[in-house]
Image (cartoon, rainbow, N blue to C red; front, side, top):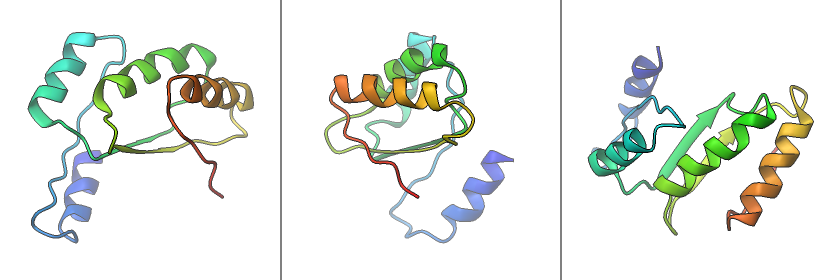
Length: 105
């Protein structure tokens, strides 16, 4: 489903834009490194429904640290209603690692 959605949306983008979809196991540093070698550096990282419990915060930030550079934009969609505590922990930890964030309506 994700690949089909990405392909459908990629057809609307300029030919110079490359879109790829990859599943990433956050705790597998080797897989993250191979992802970066195959597809990096990344200009945009998109994720959704990633932050339901506090134990997900540090592994997700570890992947973002690995794949993001100074020019990378990260867009994460999450519901504040599902786990406000997890969102607060993520925002604090992300700022502590140098990420700049905003909550959008």
